[in-house]
Amino acid sequence: MSQALQEARIFEKRHGSAIPDRDRPLFHLTPWIGWMNDPNGFSWYQGQYHMFYQYHPYDSHWGPMHWGHAVSRDLLHWEFLPCALAPDMPYDKDGCFSGSAVELSDGRQLLMYTGVRHETTPDGQVREVQTQCLAFGDGLNYEKYTGNPILTEADLPTGGSRFDFRDPKILKLPDGTFRALIANNRLGEGGQILQYRSVDAIHWSLVGPLAENHNRIGLMWECPDFFRLDGYDVLLASAQDMLPKGFEYHNGNGTFYLLGHCDDDTGVFTEESDHAVDYGIDFYAPQTVLTPDGRRVMIGWMQNWDTCNLHTRWVPWFGQMSLPRELSVRNGILYQTPVRELEALRGEAVRHEQVRIENSEIRLPGVHGRTVDLELEIEPEGPLFNRFAIRFAQNELYHTTVSFRPHESVLKIDRKFSGSRRAIIHQRRAKVRHDGGRLKLRLILDRFSAEVFVNDGEQVLSATVSTDLSAEGISFFADGAVRINVLSYQLGG
Ligand code: FRU
Image (cartoon, rainbow, N blue to C red; front, top):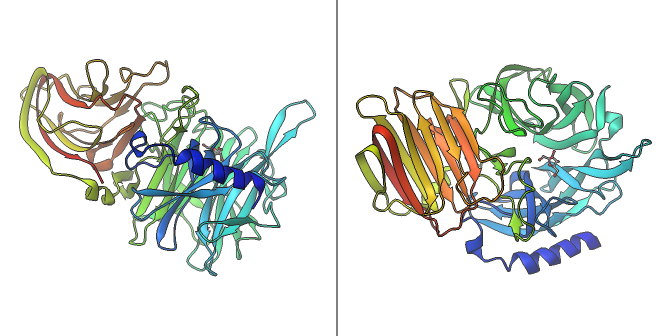
């Protein structure tokens, strides 16, 4: 084991284990210590889910990337395992960037990741040269392949940049061969997702681009994933430098999906539509796994590159994963619902039916807290109301709000009053579908985050919330008159 890996393992064990559980979310994965970004190598291997993550153990800000590692049986209770990869080879000395994992037929787990090495160009700029690398392991320890890197600029199509060639997602096909989808920047055109094929997962050849940006959704694309679901082929990718289009793509850097059909023989993907994956503030770079019982489950990094570097330097951990979300395609839309394992964390149900609210703010007995699963049905009472809001993480000073304006069909999440002392992005709005003011929401709170599932998962809005945990109030407000049904559970265990 290299000295860099050994040091990271000693450091995380000493300092990560000292962070009390109550200072982390209850069921969202955080880094053992320091900084976390993208999910990597999300997979099912030897009877458990493995999640690796972009990791800088020594600081709560981004730095030379390692791969952190955690395992879980239910996607909610995670156990930290020792750091899996450190930037310790000439070809990855400046970072082990994002990648994926697959089980080989001999039982080993293969990690495919991007090695980064700095190069000074003739005009004096320091650029990242990005190549693809492999590591073989047993679910705990990983050996980098002696033939690394296995894909370099020599494997790029004409016009593809060697400085933006990253985030391989390796797929095992039913015939036992492999595909890898890799993000690349084609000069002047923005991102493209390149497809490579291999028989042994070591020797790879270019098939061609699976999808091309032509500068329509942001510029560079990152972190692809690709799967078949409910009769569609779904490509997930995360775009940098997006321009908003109507109510889509407001996050600057954000994740989108392309829905379409891929021809198995030619590998040609015909797109039908594109949409944002999450309409909130914090969601990026998701990966999916196929569960043993056949569900497609997605986890993203619940942060935003535009704001993630503005926290104070002393936080012991920074960055968390989203809730695992079960995916399905209905009516040409990618639906997301909280993974059903979450139901096992529910305490006693608290039910309030047909509660009338008119031009006031109310609280409901038993509905409060920061680890909550709350289902809410809103309907108008008489003339259509102007605004309905649910406030949470609330005390005399602070609150975060999800508000609905039916006349505009707009749902907004707003954490301006959450106690943040930074003028970062605090709001996002989504155009939602409702039936004359009737709307269904499910709100999941886990200490430092809120995820709002709209109309049984048709849309999701996610945001981190740093409010002190003593702010536990939840209240309901109406400008006009509404009736609501509330079903709420404390989450525990
Ligand atoms: C996306 C990303 C990836 C890269 C990684 C580096 O969030 O920029 O493209 O591999 O983060 O940490």
